Image 1 (tube, chains in turn red, yellow):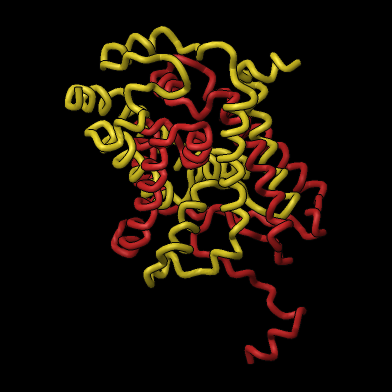
Image 2 (cartoon, chains in turn cyan, yellow):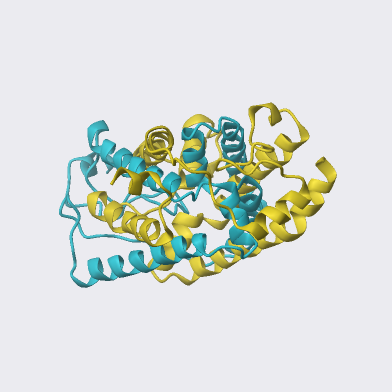
Length: 169
Length: 189
């Protein structure tokens, strides 16, 4: 059964993703090292924006949660508006990916984890002054102490995975 | 021209550029924007420990690791080659609040009072790096995403669960900043 499937391209309509992954790979064609480099380049540009707009600054996060500055609200808000318009354009004009595939975006399913986990992450966001993306940019910027924060975040993720079945969702 | 690039970018430049990451990732490889999943892939790659949540083909999701490594390089390039010639401008009211709690340094993107190597093995390090980082990693995975996966990607795609998660991020942040931090600083200073 499995042997015959291996050679049949027409079968296999379902893609297997890690359960509850918010950023899944929806491309059917596999990608080698050099193809993956394009995500590194997008990451580099993204990291530059993070630093230049001071989004990685602990002070900017403090200002946001003290309602002392519009900066972070402007950044996140305008990013959402541009993202929303882009997704609508892609969907309505049925724009295909570079590999010629249909764009696939998985729907989110509500569970109580989004509330509990969201609150927990919010507490950590105000302490560290960083969400996961800025953590990497802070380290690149030379704040070596943040390596500890990143390692601890990996431990936190692992701990969640370990206790997942026992936690309310 | 270089001066425009080296001085801090306003929100109406940075925000739309970040928003463009959404269609860029979708169109170059059918990838949904999200960063916190990288932490999970690191777990799956390094210590899956037979936990079903980490038992998947992380190599198939390796794009996310390339992406975050790129963010790190981008942070380096921007800091060392596109350096802001001026000091960071922080709201007076935030400075006053932070001074009251014992923060003394207001230069650079991060306060030296907290984010220095010497603090790693201190009570400050334990609270701000170890405990804070743990909450970020645990919370984002529990919530199924972070500011990128939920707030930007999810809300852009009109997902109600992402809006709920984002509101909870903000509530958590407000609680920690306005009630937690004053207590913590009282304790560690």
